Image (cartoon, rainbow, N blue to C red):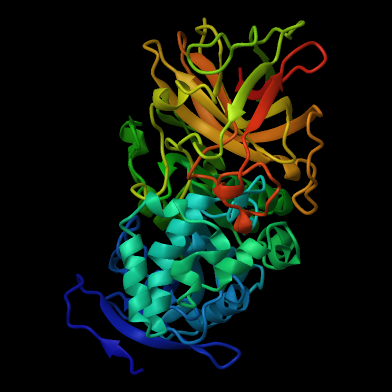
Length: 579
């Protein structure tokens, strides 16, 4: 494929299309290279994407020409097996080596300084960290955005539950259609394109191992590998970012959002690499978390407007990062505190020296009721006072009628997957949702950190799910979700070795509800919701112990769920509070 140029006026920026990028195994990848009007030399910005280099993730970033006009050669590359690049696409598997080869290629481009910075979010965020672990020549800094630390937990699965809406919508909209067209399977591409406008109905197809749109057309075979590997085994650990932390020596600017599916991984990447960097300024790590979901990044996130400070400012921030590391400019960025997180409720950013900020203390808030916590009509409450002898709460979990997702953390587009902050009354009126609310607060309460729940519970089934949500309730009773988590009971002790339950036995579960930063204002109430489903965000557990890919509602069984909150079994919320 010959290199092409364009006559389109990009404000003095020239572009070469489909420039060959040789890999060590002989495969040729392709990149578009944007150059400033002057001869340079200039540093290089590299983005590697499976989503079409012509798009260059411009749904959230400024166009590559914008960065080129600020004095950078910008190379946007199709990853292996995608669009113009050669080879076969198998997610994650070759990205470390391909990324290292691509950085070295970019460092050797004519008219450049040999210094390379990388950027991109989601999958293009993860491939940056995989490449950085290879320590390629010329790599000076990176900006991994909205990405994870582990392709198993927090990516394909969460707490053992399958990230149903994210994975299926991602496969159909972003991976499957290009894969089918590349293979010359136009009928398959048309079939998938038809499904892409049928959400959420697509989420009801079962079993997943026989997902016809993929299985019958021989598209995205790797999806079935993900279902087969439903524990954190060597298939996943061999490609995980977190297993390479010790080899990542670059300074990194980590960017994420409170309603992004990869949030926990973003925080783990920052924390682990900060710990390893110590006081070395050449390995500085920075963190910015806004109130955003995966796409787009703006002040309105679902049903809430977070105000002026929540507008997308990330291109300017990235330019400051690159100017510092690639041009030696004094942008002042490293003189600022390393952590900047948006505090919802206050609707402003807070700076801190660490995550979570110094001074955060974990408070215990205990569940209470007189045995009638189901729904908003119930008597469930939340307080700092430990429980006495209280009756448990009981509800029936019907897999055939799961609790619908209403916002939350998912990927990739808000019109096909449940993302963002929404008023929760439509969920909270259900009798299969336990509601525990505090009295109106007599003072502001700033919660910032990772929220967890200790839950004492029993079921009459061999497996089930426990889904939890933290909610902020205002003076008028409007309830908005902040974070949510799930634990598939058989994974309670280990993501590597799941074990079924003994029906009727009371187990103590530790459930990660999620990380957040929110100011509960005086007069507001804290609330948690506990149920056994959150669909289509997560797949529906049939309560039978069936594996994710093989489960169907035809075999599902109703579970009787019992939640305890008494002196010996004090279910409680662990709330990180900044005094």
